[in-house]
Length: 216
View: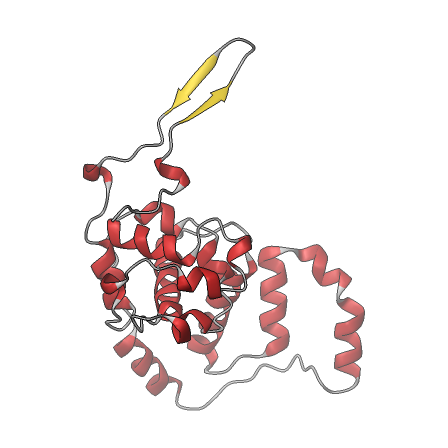
């Protein structure tokens, strides 16, 4: 079975100064791959049958956002199994997944592809592999930080954190809407917090992946 060929496997020729060509190697040898990456992701995806994918392409055909992805879901699965860790974790695909579960419903091997995407997102965040100022990973981290610190999320504080870490000027653009929500009582600046934070943090620590489980 021929594996999909991602851009990272192609040898391209780029034009530098006039009449000069520079050959850039984009071929990866097996020794450069992380051959345990597929099994590691499968374990993080709650033991889903990632390694049983038959590369039929049903997930890519079903996905409503595959046209905007740099790698289709089918290619992401293949690259994950073969150990293209850096290419997968740096791809835009895992952040574009809308979690609609269409691929999971249609998969003939009953692979929970959406859960695989979640596992890849967690892995990328843990390693710091995500686009700078991308609102999706920034929001995920800010949400987690608020829950771990206060047990609840104060929407106004979460939005302020998101805008400050991604695009502060957009916060100014949405200022009138925020003021309207505040005046009508639909948005509060009051910090929300639960009781029993010690117990909650103990629960989080018991299920949170250990740092040593994410090799550098």
